[in-house]
Length: 423
Image 1 (tube, rainbow, N blue to C red):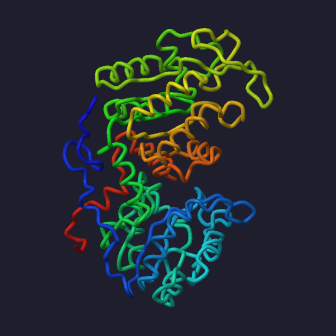
Image 2: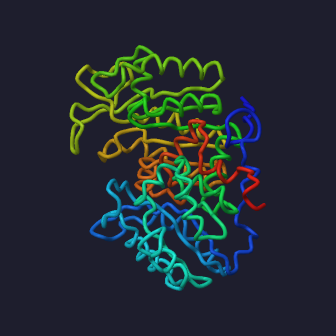
Image 3: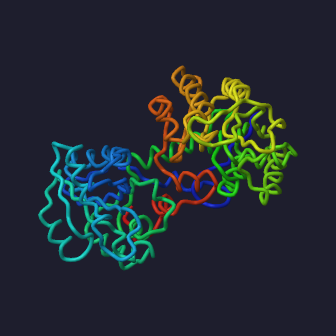
């Protein structure tokens, strides 16, 4: 079938949702200017050292581009959820140290506050081509309250604002939302890559387009599933949430994880899919076990033949083969969530097999593949195919909010036309 993509991607209602008004940093003269870059440096810290540099690496191209163009780059970010103000374990100092390792030819400063005299004094010495990482913006309650006064304090440090943190764009926080009304505002390279990838999958995809949605619970992805059935040609549901859909179809699922209270929701989603002409695909065979742990015995059975004391822990080979056939007939795939209990090795096979097939078709030029979500990225890494996908998003909540059809305050802020902000 050939569904018409709904227009736009950023604001509620019909019509252009604002992307056409989002300005990028391409061609902007930043020489000698103070450029505030909102990054997402919320990375895992173990024993005082950055344990995973993925998010940090995503923002480096924007920082390097600006620094090489002669800007004074000032990085804003949060880390964790500090509740009582400043704390050592949520300091951005280790992130700044790691950034020095990753950018050995750029001078990186760490400043122990993000507003006030210490910040002003530290930034006064910043030279063109250098980078300053300010302390955790969440050390101040005004950040999460989207306080205009706190946003003004941050904005005083810069001449230009650049948001390169799509993964925080679902938060209406001061360094994400309010600040964009106080300075000329632009999207960074990573932000635009995220938006463009989701546009390709949701708003203007090469059809037919298929979504693979997995995970444990229907309740966590009701809006995602409801939104996708009106946008997709095929929606494949896996993981624990598939069990709730199977139960809604009257299929025996034994002792499997499911949400009986959401059976009515599953039925409504299936009805919406049918009305929209979206093929909703569920497993036809499954892997079952009586003991969900490493080394446990398991076997494959048809759905409907699951014993009362067994639980479904993965999709079966017949289901994987059927999904591969589906993939061969579509041009775009959007993936969020695993198809099985991937944390236990034997039960990740269905997810890994499908991931490798998506990667193969992508590399062959037959498929545009967009994936996101923490567990999804983990599975793709395990399969060794992250680099083979068209785009893999590092965003979690923002990725799901977008899939659910929600506006993202951080993106809307970049699209706003405001007389107070220079053109």
